[in-house]
Image (tube, helix red, strand yellow):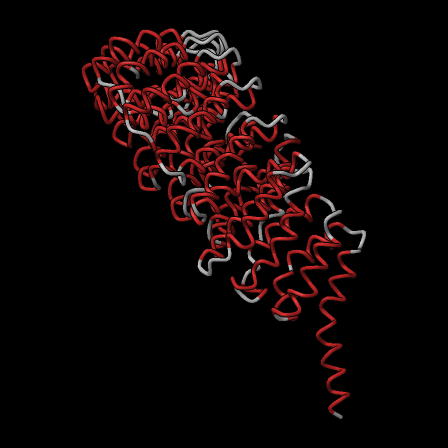
Amino acid sequence: MSSKGSEEENEETLYPIAILIDELKNEDLQLRLNSIKRLSTISSALGPDRTRTELIPFLNESCIDDEDEVLLALAEELGNFVSAVGGAEKASCLLAPLETLCNVEEATVRDKAVKSLNKIATEMKAIQQTDQHFLPLVRRLSSGDWFTSRSSSCGLFAVVYPLCNNEIKAELRQTYGKLCTDSTPMVRRSAATHLGEFASKVEKEHVTTELINMFQHIRDDEQDSVRLLAIQNCVAFANILSAKESLQYVFPCIKSCSTDKSWRVRYMVAEHFRALCESMGPEVVRNELVGIYVKLTQDTEAEVRTAAGVKIAEVCSLIPKELLIKDVLAPIETLVYDKSEHVRAALASDIMGLAPALGKDDTIKYLVPLFLQLLKDEYPEVRLNIISKLDVVNQVIGVDLLAQSLLPAIVELAEDKQWRVRLAIIEYIPLLASQLGVRFFDDKLSNLCMTWLADSVFSIREAATNNLKKLTEIFGVDWARNNLLPRVMAMSNNSNYLYRMTTLFAISVLASVLNGELIAEKMLGVALNMSKDPVPNIRFNVAKTLQIIIPRVEPRIVQDQIRPCLTVLSQDDDPDVKYFAAQALHHVI
């Protein structure tokens, strides 16, 4: 009896791994992927011993030739497997499959395997097993024949270095130096990527001797894909070294990279410029880095100018105001007129951030003229980027001055003879309204919005009508009741049928954001009265509008007021009016 029970128990424990084997051999990629993601459940069923002796070896032998997606999932799962194999004391069994994954061709899989190895090594530190199991792994990978293993090894030095004695540490520094000058660019890239992290674990005296040489090798590498990584190392080394040492060792690299023959390297300088400024300190920023930044804004490549333009506020926040006015504003002005719309858009997205640094008077003197020019840019994204950041300027110079300086330009664009220019400004109005508030809108912009409702171009009237909905969502129903509806509903009596038509469009659009009570009180009566309009286009649009209103008001109102009106319209002489009235009647309960 006990023998039979033992057999059943054995079969039960074998079942999970048998299922896993079947699923991992299945042709369906998604099924294999799902089985990898369920490894933690399977390991729980097997227990730590069988997970170590059966599951891990099986994964190491059977899964390595699978698709990259499966390998990526496996690399991630193994990083969370320490408790599944019995804790940190037993975690060394996970190193073999992850070492195998560190050798695959796909970089994302290798990166994930390295990340998981670092995670496991951190847990192994506590029981001092890292040097026993992890150090040999690093040695094997760093001396491997394939570039993949050497590349992967670079991400493991930082975690193992602090746990070693001085002799081993010297060996690791020497090995890392060889990786920085490896014959394969991919290995040198990986060494460059992880150098800063490794340097943060190395003793200061060795950083200023050995690791600085590695840093300089990266800066002078023949491949721009390696050299561009020197910039992130500039930040890392500057944070480790003293100000004097940074000026001696790091600044020459920044200067060299800022004039590199490859635009990709110069781009990285612009991209990381704020971090470079913060790490190098205010004196170097004032004396050296401002000049480099100005040159980047005038670079021959648009991509570099774009990267510099989008960082203007960040960089200038670290520069004394007098230096900003003296040395930086003139180059910024040239970007306003840059031939590349991407550069101008990047500048427009960030230039408003200079206002707090300059203060009220100098913002009005130096920046407002630039804002005005960008507001007139032919490229829509440039205009949008300026309008979307007006709140920053508003906080510095105030609404009144903003209205005096920038509002005339907005109004001028809103009345432009080109309808597409008018349309662009209309679409920005809700954004502007949300930033500057209801009072500013009512005083300065509401009349403009009403003017657009009667524009000769249908697209303008349509956009202006849609704006009413957006403005109601921003300012609320009470604002719409008191400020918007009286003016819009009054248009229903205008002798020009376009005004009357716009009223119906407005009712249709606003019905979705107003409550039924307000619709019945303020809008329904207007629509019903317009059912007697002499223009057939108006009458059939009344039918369409009533169809939209039906689900928004009480059934009693539908039966007492809307149904009779639609019934009359369904007997209209005009076929279009009859058709749309009949369509609307189908929606009456």
